[in-house]
Image (cartoon, rainbow, N blue to C red):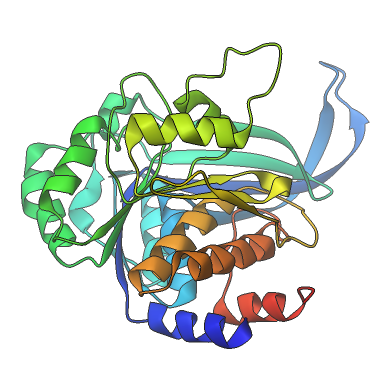
Length: 328
């Protein structure tokens, strides 16, 4: 397995991926608590440090950069202090980001997590209404079209914050070069309609919503049952349902699918694991890897990041080391 993974990781370095989606700033407040508040039955956390990481679509892009791929990131960021911090972090990662995507008509999306003794105890989100993150036509015609023309693959990173809409998906499908892989990690909602993307990577809860089976009270539908309905409704070329501790369900077009076990040794935090999976899968497939090899690589990378706290990435060296530690 190691020689195949090493070769595939080398090929990924030649891939150009465009990530389109909801860009966020992840803020972490770290501290400790030894008493309850007199105002409410909640802990009083004494904050000792503050850290920031790229979140949402920016975390997908960061995962691609960690693999060595060339990355372009597209989505709206506010012209505010958080946006300037986020823009600087994007530049530090050497991600291509058009300055015209910083707009005065929206605030930067920020997720603040309060961490106590390595455990998340609360999250606070700052964001505007989804309509604020919709793109004006000049951005589509003069920025996104050029970005699409240069990409070997496109990832639509959807967190239902406003960037990814049915119209954007159709626009991307109409303007990519023939044969370009389009990958979608959808956040299900009634107004989002699409069909025929190259790769879909919902988690179990998202798959249940996409299949319209979330109202079943007597039993939990199987992943295979949900996948069958999703394939009939949305016609993806490849569907992969991430199942947490139960691994992944891999469904090539027209096939019922097969399961692979998780490669995680220990799990500290699943934040951003889905970002890692879609990033690695897309890069590996765009680099010419087989579906089996791409899934194996993505599973190994996810096994690395869930062993870290917070949104994280996996480098080629970390992935190969993790691969070497797997049972034969």
